[in-house]
Image (cartoon, rainbow, N blue to C red):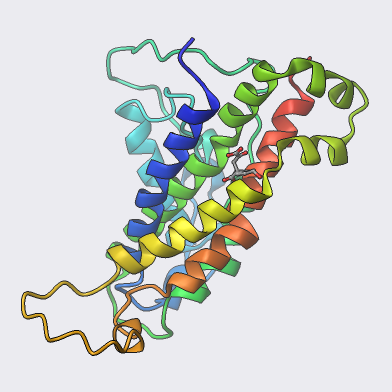
Length: 259
Ligand SMILES: O=C(O)C(=O)C[C@]1(C(=O)O)C=C[C@@H](O)C=C1
């Protein structure tokens, strides 16, 4: 069937655009800390009595609405709060079945959630509160969903790698040898290409576009300050979090690939 290492890498490349744009959109607003106070609101119905943050309320309710229109029917999409979802009201669509069923449920949503709020968000937003809480929460949702889609796509990457050379993977899977699987799925040169490319995308997408072009002064630093998200931060976010989490998904998927 039509899934190859090239096609899954093309997907990851296209998803970089979505991630970089979503970070740029989120960086339009300051950190807006009231959204993240863990005791701002009560969770509804089943969770009545437990407190949660405003952003969690926003994501839970948004996922519920999106699920009605068919989100999470596509195996590429993984919800943060699966327990809250309702049945879709859209006509069923026959998404192609690529993933191995016993491994398809591999999920690092909780890790993505905490990494995003603890490690990523503080690195590309400025401190402060501007009161645009709903817009800010909507931007967080866009970032979270783009990251989740990318990281969980590691399942598809792993499936392709397994199909391309089962003889290499089967002994490591049988031995539950995570280190061996890590070596098998890793391509240092590919990771460097990805990190350099997202850095470049942050520079290209995040510069101010103007019509008056002054003569090039040759001072490349003069435009640096204008980037909406620091390209070197995006390089590091990918190197420290996005790629490592994708690899964890790949390994966890492979460990279940013979179940
Ligand atoms: O492209 C691959 O081969 C992948 O497995 C994806 C990815 C990535 O997250 O970008 C992860 C591991 C490899 O070391 C290289 C890149």
